[in-house]
Length: 84
Image (cartoon, rainbow, N blue to C red; front, side):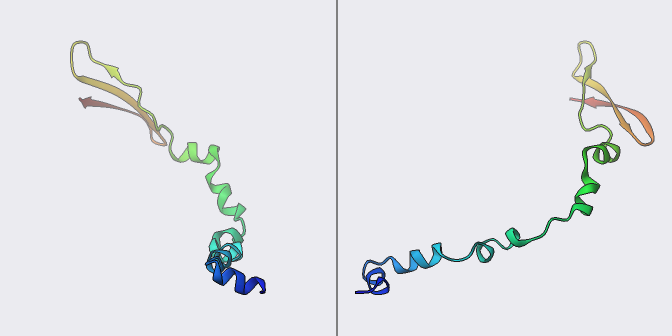
């Protein structure tokens, strides 16, 4: 009995076939080349320039459910009041 017949009788042929499929057929992105020119557009320094302020530091008004925060962008500083 050869290995092919043995695997068919033991119902192991198809699992072995799927395991042996080359990785580039299973995951087409694995064979994709890196695009360093595009990746350079998203460095930390460049992202900070595009999105100056991504966090909110709330400053609560005394005895109220409102707060204000400062937002920085390329136009300068902005202040917003939020009614929580």
